[in-house]
Image 1: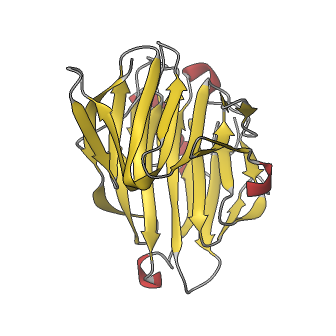
Image 2 (image 1 turned 180 degrees about the vertical axis):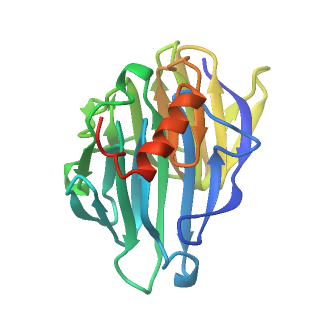
Length: 280
């Protein structure tokens, strides 16, 4: 059985053109969970905390996954893709050999809320051609059973297959639990696994079998074997659940680039400065 090996609370951070967010993976407390490089939660009723958005910026060597809960964000990139990510939608972008893109709020009022997850790629895939997947909410299967509702974004779960086409063995679920409901999921022994609670709280156990709670704004690293079992508290819970096969390769990263060596990072900056980032 998988247990909660570590609990991490997201820390305040700023990214893009001043967007205020909460960084959970990619922080001093939790550098990464191979193959997951970063997890940010953004969300506020104050437009001044997010209206500046994420103007044009480059990426190389990994994938970005944007999950929208509330609001609208417009995407545009150097490969020619454009689209609007609305509440419930997911954008799965493979930076590969290089892409320059922007993610800008579509309105200057109301609430903007969601997540961005970075998924690493192995060396053999880091320089593949970039691609963009606009996964609309209507395409994401939602399965309900015993007071548990699961949106299957990527991978398989609860008898459904997610629409996101992943390059690596990765599963991503958006889970809603009613009060007292129990979430159970089989996980391959070799996979890294985490749960991030964004509303309410869930209970699991630590390595000694003692009850341990993961509350809203916190992430639980799940280690062990076989299955995961989590029970919601009295107010229910909403969470992101992810597992993936570790790549186990050297990681060199700086800002928007994630490669295997410092020389490859330097090459990415040189290509970007010469306007050659988007070519292999």
